[in-house]
Length: 377
Image 1 (cartoon, helix red, strand yellow):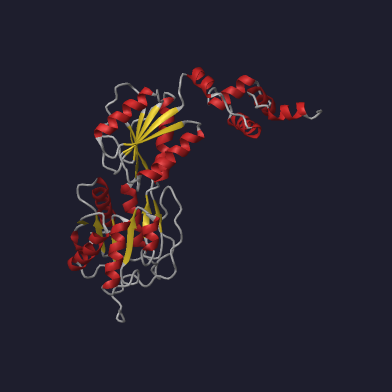
Image 2 (cartoon, helix red, strand yellow):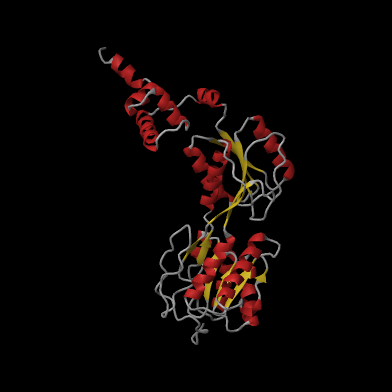
């Protein structure tokens, strides 16, 4: 019987005063630290947060909303029902929002404008604090028609309105990383095979690949980029077209990993060794695709999780009255695997991009610029 009061005390939920006492601050300071208000030192916020974690303290969300005038909820709308590109963006955004104790309502419009407007109206009726709109492609899209003002940030696919806040991957920088890496391994006859000419990702990557080559006094092998589809089938067709246009091709930069996977198959079936005869690079770092390519594929990673995280941070800033405008580009990084090898006359460390470390290249590559094997099967 004597232990009953003690057990009851142990079961009592921690209060804000308990957190304040443990952190050595006043309850008012503890409240400001936990709600992200006030001009507090970072170490004070960290001490209060750690005290709350140790005590298992959970703020009263209803009281928090009344105090701040916010619901601490945001809408996250995606137009990509497949999720190949939007899913990492959404995960990055959710991680950043969760760190700020903000709940997320996820809506998939499936690319339907009517469904999109329905979700916008539904989310606004819930008094959300803001919206993130994640596109299916990097093509710019019209801004949302909002019946009521609310902060909006566009992720992956930017808004056509320069006054809106958008966060997108740096396709221009990513293409440059791939070309500079291939040049660093001694390749000079570099073909570019990419997706549909009406897709922004394809045209931007092709334009900046050509610029990077021009700065080295070169042009794409065959004189121009080859546009087609985002598919393995086009990769197989495209690499044959590239070789017909320039039989001395010593590297192929593909606008997607799917295209590169098809190109790798076609090169192998035609008796070319990758990377000894022709180096191969892709784009997207679709890990399942890149790892299954033979040999494993060097590719550009768009840092999509960081795109989502940055979009969430910009939305929280806008909610706090500090909106940004225009398109913010998140740097890509190059992931080096065996398909580009290394030249024995050049350093094994490729160009280091902004925004990520580059894994070391495989030491199993052959001489750049070699031709097809004489003992092919």
